[in-house]
Length: 448
Image (cartoon, rainbow, N blue to C red; front, side, top):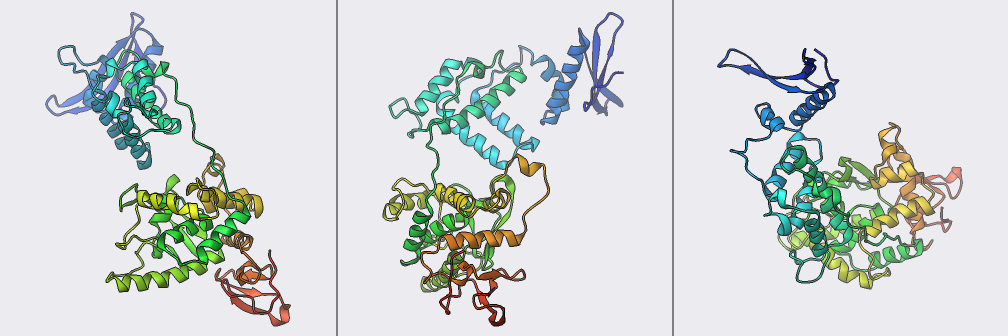
């Protein structure tokens, strides 16, 4: 019996020129024998296509007992037309059970469907037309009475809903719930969000000076984490003191939107980000200040407390932080419309453009992932990442007088302890161990 690669079952030719597909259904206790699904088709090509479709159906969570209905479709007597709501939940559940997509993608699926649900959720799948879908997109991006969400979405956000609907209706057509896919004739929304910007090194220096020269708050420390370590907003809000070793921040989770729970970071990858000296100094100062505040307010402090804490001692939610940042950024020496994520763009741009750090080191420090990462197993070492962080720290140091030894070209990190190093300013004979935050006492400070 001919086989199809990577497929269970097979097919064989009949004397009349047709072909029969055979797929094992498993042991039948009542019959005390194995059941087999058989179906005749006209050509060998049809047999191969059918066998592949059955295997794909099982691979994506379909039940063996449902194969006959999957192939032939439900009988007209028992057929029930599904609503978009019903099939969307089945589709998302199927993707989750198949474990072929990350939990983050499942969350994106649900969010994408939530936006279109008020418009087409109660409709039957078969009644949805390209015109209805494009009208839905127009309403989502409208600020008029036709917008049922109460929020005007950008074209870029609407594109995410379009991607979900495209995948869902493709699967609905595959399962014969609809005769044709309406998405085949729908024009995708256009991306319309502004390109992200980055601060200049002068602007970045001014922002850091503004934060560190004033009284620290949890949220201002969050801004410093954003520009000084390139963390995404959800990553920054999830970081606890347990994730900070005095020299670097461990990024192994991100805060769920508007919840106290966390999830894996984007790309499912954990990374250790060396901190620039000014960030180390500020975090050490903030830790002591936060511990005093907890004691004064009768709260128990521990290593599991968020670095950026709320007034309850818990994580600050994204909505609350963004609301504060939108107001506070006006007083910072940055553009009035500068969004938090652009601090991350600044971090990456300064490392690459001003510090001339190689792309691989920059990617690993910022947590970016691209095709090259899939094809190689080489990685930068800790020393090169620490050197990159120190270069950025030197770049952002306001003046020679206030800069720490970690910013000086005569200071070198210790391979055993990245928080310690040696000062070479007076020559090898007077070599002395110094920490990152040690201020220059001999007046020989020089920028890297």
